[in-house]
Length: 147
Length: 421
Image (cartoon, rainbow over all chains, first blue to last red; front, side):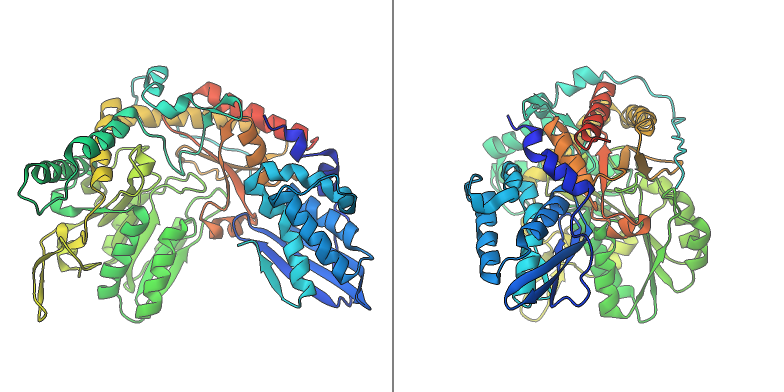
């Protein structure tokens, strides 16, 4: 049987209550909106890139605990990374939730706390929304949806 | 928004329901979800099916299956007979004058689209007005927007107040000689509000408008008499009335239906076809193109028999008791706010918890075996009105119990524990 604590881990509840980097970046070089039409989750992602490195990344919006915590954790793990590293992390995180990726992969760091989401298919889109928005921003798209 | 709420339980007295005995009629109610007994409180989305409905559909396929209205063989005769008997059952259920006024559709959505397209498309002229309300389901908004776009008609919306009641002064103000059709929910799916449809119909008729009632959330909870209501169109879905999915009903006043052009062309809706001209069939077949959902229709007939044997007044009274109990217990939960506190409500409890998103509520409740709906309930303008992205919604049927309401409240307490509130 699934355990609720696998999904709503302490870290997730904490990041939901006090999301990190919950703001808009002045002078952002890249922004995109993320929207999950099924849930109504919305977020706006902004980034500041210098020489291909993500110097700052932040988000604003409203969503469930999974989407808010995922976005908060993502901003922490993307800061200081190159665009190529961010893409690799996107792939690893995506595989973690959808294709049995290894939650013990050290590259995931704190993101591994979201591994429990894969037992809740209806909630995977909540966790992945911010990543789609981040990738859209990096690719120069204005918006991403989970549809 | 006020936390005060009063539920009108002063409906006509009805004998107490033997709920435990009736629950045995519904095989799925024995199911376990995530290792816990299923507490099914998503009845506004769809109701569960009694064994008699499931058996009727199976018996149709095992013993009768044939196309209707065309074969001369025995099975086709039998299938046609049962299909038309179901129409007579619906006629009696709604107290319509004639079976010519009962059209089978796929559901409420198709019924409304039929009226918007056929009645609206043939009647609406540039500048005519369609009046709907601020609490409508998307299926009673979008068809009108589509036809307004095609005809140049204008869509007007009666606002709702903080309780989730129609502001009737605004309704009377917006109603005018330009109003061609008024289309409103009999009961709101997102808020549970029972609308004052008698007053709406009287005033609309006095202004020369016709009235369509979206009865999707009403037909399973209260007796509907289209002659007493004096409405022009009434739409409902079988699957919210313990019948299969994919079958619904449009009641229409015969004179209006006679004057309306067909909605779809095809088999069964014609008398004679040549490449020069087609002569349409009589009512109700004019609006039933193609082979219909025969099994679903016969299943709907069985569901109506079941509901009438149990007794809608007693079912409605039991549901109102559950709603009153759920409302009282919910109000005692810290940080819980009920969305939709109309004075006249039916079987819907929409709510939010401070600082906790409805989808997290839904997941945790599901984990506890409690099935509810979370989201915008296909009524985004209602969510916008309350400044919310979504709500959690528990909706009751006659087979629910006080113990299940208590399980809902206990599961909400678990949500608060998970979020340490």
